[in-house]
Amino acid sequence: MSNLNNLIGLAVLLSLVLGILIIWWQKKHYYYLRTFFVKEKSKNAQQTNIIQLKASGQFVWNQTEIPNGKNQPARFVVMEGEYLKQADQIVIQPDKSYQLKYKNVADLVKNRPAQVGHAVADQPIILNLGKDKSVFLSGQALKSVAQTSPIKIEKLKKMTQPQSA
Image (cartoon, rainbow, N blue to C red):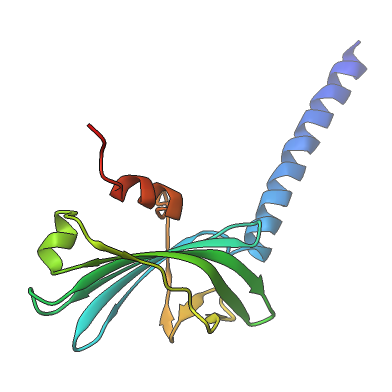
């Protein structure tokens, strides 16, 4: 009976060690499967991107563009599609998008009615992979974000539809 208990204990311990090794290996090889954040500034606007890469080869990308002038148009875009990981880059090909154009920044912040549009990128978007397991967009390092999930197109459509009385 004692040998059976020892054998069971050893099997449980080996299972835990194996599970930890599998998790470590997955994090090392699939470091790009997470949600990223990057803020880009230009002389005319500030752009915030939240990019989620999923193990299924799908992605969700939220992009907010806020102009420097208060009365200039602002926009919020959600893109969805597939990506392909290559040796030193990730090629993102959006196939669906939903875009909200606001008259100004105040309308975006207050989520006032916006002009709805659809625009799918005709060129793939490239994320470069660094040797130190970092991910870059247009030469700028993406920051990994925990506990954040971008809004999907279907949810955004429901949020922006007029409420029936």
